[in-house]
Amino acid sequence: MQEIYPRFYHEFKCIANRCEDSCCKDWDIDLDSATEAFYRTVKGPLGDKMRRLAVTDEDGDRVFRSVGGRCPFWNDDMLCDIFIGVGEEHLSETCANFPRVAVDYGGFREHLLSFACPEAARFMLRSDSGAYADFGGAVEYSVSEDRDDGMSFLLKARARTARLLTDRTVSLAYRLADCLEFNAQVQCVLDGFEPAPLPEAEGSGGCGFILEMHQGFEIMSDAWRDALKQTAARADSLRIRDDFDDAFEQFALYYLYRYYLEAVNSGDVMYAMRRMTCAYLVTGKMDALFFEQGYPYERMRILQRYSKEVEHSYENTDALNACFEQDERFSPEKLIQCVIHNASFLNP
Ligand code: SF4
Image (cartoon, rainbow, N blue to C red; front, side, top):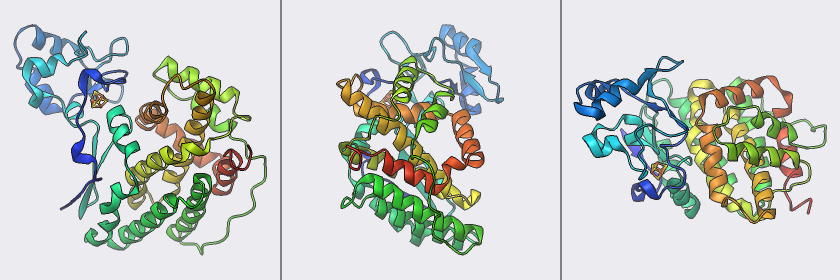
C-alpha cells in the first residue's frame, strides 16, 4: 500500500488548551466499540461518568453528547479528563485521529489534515501548491483490478484540475471558472457523452441563493449564524477581495484532494467542484465583510469554521447534495457566472 502525505503532515501537533476552536467544542464524540468496551472497565468516578454519558444517537452510533457545546470530558483548564485519567492510548479513534484523515483507494492511501482544526488550517495556509506534490504521482500507484482505468482517468483529471487551480498567472475566480468548465467536460466523459461546450448562462450572476441555502443548514455556533446573516444581507454588494486568492487556493486544494476521487464510486466529479465553488462564494463574501469590519475573526477562522460547520456535517453535506441535484442554478455555467461576477477584479 502506497501511503501519500502532504509535505506539512508530519509537522502537525495538536496545540491542546491553546486552541481557539477546539475539536472538543460543538461536536458529539463518536465512540468506537473497542474504546467503549475499555471504558466499561474503568473504575472510579471517571468510569462511572463514561458509562453514564455514553448514549446511542439518532443514527445508531454510540457517542458522548456535547453538553452546552462542550465535550463533557473537556475540563475547565481546556484539557481532556480521559487523556489525563486513562492515557492518550485510550482516546476514541475519532479523538486520537482528528484532524488526520486517511482515504484508502485500494492501491494507495491518501492522508490529509482537516481544515476544521485551526492549527492544521494554519499549516495549510502557510504552505504552497508544492505541499501536495506527491499526490500527483498517485497515478503510478493505481494498480487495482477493474477500477484501474477509471481511477487512472480520475487521477489525471485531478492533476489537471490542480494545475488549473494553482496557475497564479490568472485570478482565482478565473481559475475556478476554468476548473468548472474542464470538469464539466470530464463529467461528460464519465457519463458516456461527447464533451460539449457549456451553454451561455442566463441571469445576473448573483449568489444570494447560495448564502440563503447556507443559512438554512444546521448551524452550531451563534457567531457563524450571525456572520452568515450579515453576509447574506450584503450578498449583492460585497465583492470577493483579490488578496483572498492565496488563502482560498489552499482551501480549494484541500477540497480537491479530500473529495475529488470519491467519483471513483459516485461517478460524479462535479460534486467536489460545486462544493468548492459554494465554499469560495460564502467564505469570500464573508472575508470581504470582515475586511470592512477590521476582521473580528481572522481570515483563517472563516475557512476553518466553514469546514467545521458545513464540510464536517453529514446533514449539511446531504442538503448540499440535494440542492445540487435539484436546482439548475448549480449548473456549471451558472456557477462560472457567479464566481466571475462576484470577484472584485471585474467589479471594483
Ligand atoms: S482542533 Fe486541532 S489543535 Fe485544536 S484541540 Fe483539536 S486537534 Fe488540537
